[in-house]
View (cartoon, rainbow, N blue to C red):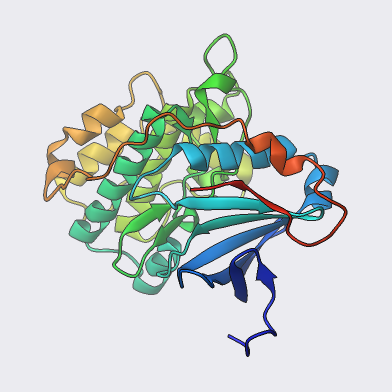
Length: 308
C-alpha cells in the first residue's frame, strides 16, 4: 500500500493492486479502513455496460450472488455506485484458480480431486435449491482460498427460476465449448440444472486426468464428440470414478445422473463432509435497479445500494 492519502478510496475502502482484468471489468485488492477487512472489488464502467447492453446481465449476476450464501461460493458484501462506475465488493479468495493448480500439478490424486468435486457439488446443489443455475462452470471459475477451500465464482451467465420461459427450458446457448452439455448444442431447449451437472463431470475428469474429455481444434468436430458422449477414461481412474463420470457425461439429459443421486454415490461419499452453514432467509432484490439510477452529478461515490 502507498503512503496514507495517496491511495484511491471508494467509500470505506482503500484500493490496492489489480488482481485481474477482463474485457468488461477490473478486480482490485482493497482494504476496509474501518474494520481492516481485506476484500476484492470488481469495478465496472457504467457507459461500457450500457453500450454493450449488459445491464440485465449485471443485475442478474448481483441478484444471484445476493441469493447464494454458501461456504463454497464467493460472497458478495455490498455494491456501490457513482455516476460512472459500479463497485461490487466481494470476498477476497487468495489461493488462485483451480485451473492454475491443475496446470502446475498436471493432474490431481483421486482423493484430492474428489474433495474438490464434493465441494463443487455442495455449491451447485445449494445454487439449484435457490433456483440458480450457473451455466459456465469450469476450473477458471473455481477459486481456492488459502485453506484450500473451493469457491465458485463468476455468475455472469447465471439464470434463476423466475426467468424461465413457459416450457420450463432455457434456450440461450452459453458456456465454454469444452464444458458445454450436448442438449445446449442441439438447441432444443435445456434444463440449466442438468447442464451444470454435465459441466461438473467435465471438471472432475479434468481434475483427475489433467486434460479434457472432449477436445478438438475444430469446434464442429468437438461438438460432434460431445453430442455422442465420445470419450474414454484413463486406465488409472478407479472403477468407481469411471462409473460415476460415465453417468454424469451421459449425452441424454433425461438419463444423466442427478445431484441427489451423486450425493448418494459410493465413490462420491468417501470422506464426504456435508457443508455446515446458516441458511439464508428471504432475500430482497428490489434494490438492484437502483445501481443504474443516475447518482448525483459527481464521479465520486454517492451511496451504497446493497449492504451485507
